[in-house]
Image 1 (cartoon, helix red, strand yellow):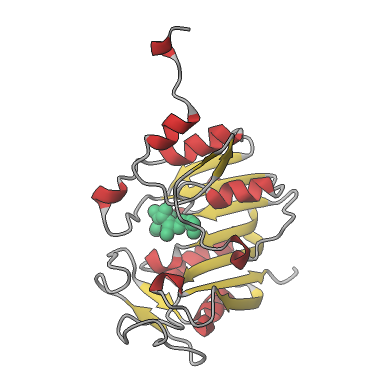
Image 2: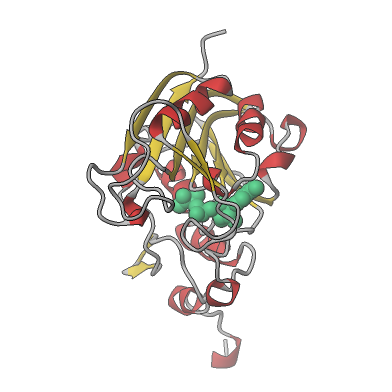
Length: 251
Ligand SMILES: C[S@@+](CC[C@H](N)C(=O)[O-])C[C@H]1O[C@@H](n2cnc3c(N)ncnc32)[C@H](O)[C@@H]1O
C-alpha cells in the first residue's frame, strides 16, 4: 500500500481529537490525554460484571463503557446527546462519537458487545434499547433540567443496579464560597444553578447534597441505596463529588 493510502495510526487518530475528557489506556503505550475519572475506585462498580447488560448514560469518550466490557459485561449500550461542552464549545470542539469510535476500534470491541446511540436520557425506551442489569449515570445528573424524570426513565429499563456519580453541594456551594461551605448532612438539599453558577458551565442545573442524592435514587425505585463522597475535606470544587448505588427490590 502506498504511504498516502495508509490508514492513520491510533496515535494519529487520538491526536486528531481536539479535546479528550477521558484518560483511556488503548494499549501499545497509547493513553488518551483526558483527566477523568479522578479516581476509578471511588465509583465502586463491581469488579466482576460477567454477563451483565449495561447502559452507560452520557458516555463521552467511553471510559465507563470500556471499563464494563473489560470487567466482563455481555453488552454495553452507550448513549449521549453531546450537550455538554464544559461551558466552552470552541475549546472542547466535540465531534459526535469520533473519540468513542477511535477507542472502541483500538480496543477491539465489536458492535455485538458495544453499541452507541445519539439520544437523550429522556428518549430512553425499552423498545429501542431493551432492558439492562446495570445503569451507569456518571457526571450527568447535574446537567439535566429534569433529574428525577431522567432517573424515572432509567428505572423503567433497569432490572437491578444503578451507579451514580455527580457534582454535589454537600461540601461546596457556589452561593456560599470556597469548598468547605456547603449543605452537609440533612435535610436533603438540591441546589439550583439557573445560569453559570456551577463551574461556569451553563449546562449545569442542579447539585444535590448526599442525603438528597440518595433519596432521589430511592424515589426512582431503587432500594438499599448507599451514598458516599469522593473525599472528606475537599479543597477544590471539582473534588466535591458524590456517589450513590442502589438495587431494584426482588420481584
Ligand atoms: C461530565 S460528562 C460525563 C462523562 C462520563 N459519563 C463520566 O462520568 O466520565 C457528561 C456527559 O453527559 C452527556 N449528557 C448531558 N445531558 C445529557 C442527556 N440529557 N442525555 C444524554 N447525555 C447527556 C454530556 O453530553 C456529556 O457527554
